[in-house]
Image 1: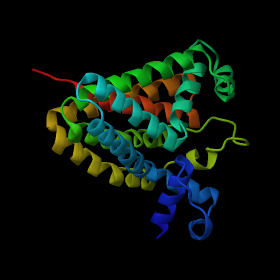
Image 2: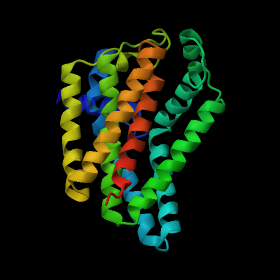
Image 3: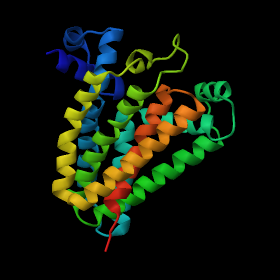
Image 4: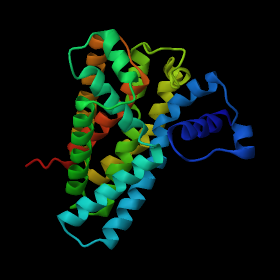
Length: 266
C-alpha cells in the first residue's frame, strides 16, 4: 500500500489531478514520502500519455485525414498534456536554456534559472522543441492512430525515467531553503531507480510490439544520447542538477524518442 500512496503523491505533485479529502488524508505527506515518490515519475507518464493519446485518437477520428489534420491533432494532444501537467516540464526546459544558453558562471546560471521571466534562449528552446514534437508526432500519425498513440504512451513514460538517472548520478545544487522540488530531488537510490525501471519496462515492450525492434532501438539510442548530453552538460556547467534541469531532461528525451520512432531507414 505504501507504493500506491507514493504513486498518488507523485500524481498530485506532477499533474493537476486532485488528491483531496479523505483520499489525501489516507495518502499523507512528508518530505521522505515525496522523495520516495520520485521512482513513480514514469508511472505518472502512463497517466499523462494515456490522456494525450486519447485526445490525439479522438482528434484524428474527427479531423480530415492528411498531414494537416495529423498536425492539428498532434497540437491538440500536446496542448492537452501540457495542461494536465501545468506545463511543469516545459517551464523547466525554458529556465534551463535561459541559464545554460550563454556563458554565464555557475552561480549566475543558477540565479537566472530562478527568474520567473523567460529569456531569448528559453523562448527559442521551448518554441523549437514544441514545433519538433508536433512535426514528429504528425509524421508518426501518418502510419495510423495505433502507432502514434503507442509513441505517445511510450515516450511519456520513458522520458520520465531519464531524470531518475540524473538524480542518481549527480547532486542537487539548487537553494535548499526555497526549492519546492528539494524533497523530491534530494536523492535517488537503487530502490528509486528499480521502481522507475518497473514502470518503464512495459513501455519498452509496447513500443517494440507496435513499432518493431529497429524503431525501438533507434528510439532508445536517441534517449540515451539526449540523457548523456544532459548529464555531461550539467556536470560541467552546474556540478549537479536542479528541478528545472530535470524538466529539461524529460522534454529532450521525449523529443529524442519521437525522432527515433519517426525515422524511416531503408
